[in-house]
Length: 489
Image (cartoon, rainbow, N blue to C red; front, top):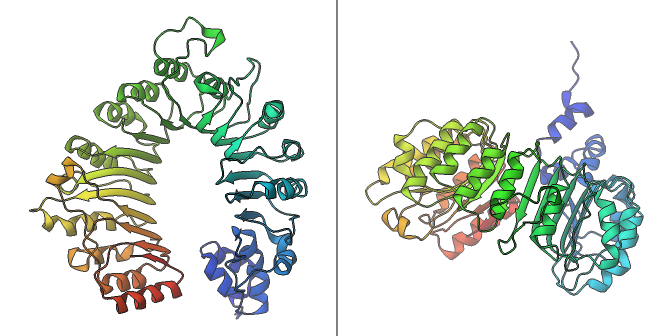
């Protein structure tokens, strides 16, 4: 029988690497030269962040231009928070560049960004953001030279009159376009013949200059949309938004809903709508969608939207709602009982008694849960039962337990308590837990914090109130820091 050690096989090590955090990959570099050769490309190709202090998550305490230059051929995903001319600007395998410009660094942009783009023709995804209001457009000629660009994200930028044609030309090959706090020349719109058939994902937040009319034309020019996020105002009606359907009457919201029903976007499955929509407006839109996988309802969640959403329960993967009443509490509990494919749920508040008295949850694939379990003064005995329900969500990675201050919560003032005496130990089986956020929960003790370290090996962040003295606080913070875990107390 062969005595070959499986860990000596590069293929086995690569499979193991898929389940390791970046810090663990760095530790693997130190095992031996063979492991070093296997894991080094994985350390560098995954998200690399360089900021103006030149710090990076690698064995070296300080990232030097020489170290970055010697490994640049391994980098696929690069995030730049600030940059220096001493660093290399060519990365042969780069696919994604996330460029975040600090306030007051606009002159730097003109000097380095265009050469950085031009020397990296392999770019597929480009994110350009700024903290400054004086950030102008990038070099659109440089972007036109990127043959493989499929995703463009712009934040805090402006598109000048002379660049409009170049911008639309770039959009013709994109699959994803994300615009946030972007300014166009006033009155910008699209020609009726323009069509962006490749765009599958479109996000339009705080886009000025195009107004609702121009934005609606842009959305209408993307017939293969799958994911739409759109924050719009209600100040402008769209009587003339669609020249081929000028007879269409009714409010702006009804027009959009009618276009959804007419299958203008037959592949649309994900929808985020910002603005002053009503529950009735959202019902019209949901009724027109063939399939819903992801939807953000916010303030439009109620009995009507719940009813029209029911036929999509089997397909629903992500849902964001705002539940702050006894009526919506029951609806939220029912969603967790009838949506088996749900992976992310942001739900506001649910009463503990509704969970205990309701049907068992079927959303066992949940990875992210943001919810506030509320208890009255006489319902503290229900705390362990809620932990037992959470314990069944074995794929859970992020748990946010918020607590709000509204008239509704005055009647149910107590949130879930992440204490061992309340039933926290039931969550020992949540092996994938990465993030815990607990708001207005009773202060945790040193025991709860150490329990989390012992049972949640993948933990990276904990935010909670604690009841410990200053000396113990420092010891616990140092312990979490040594494990690479962010602890906010």
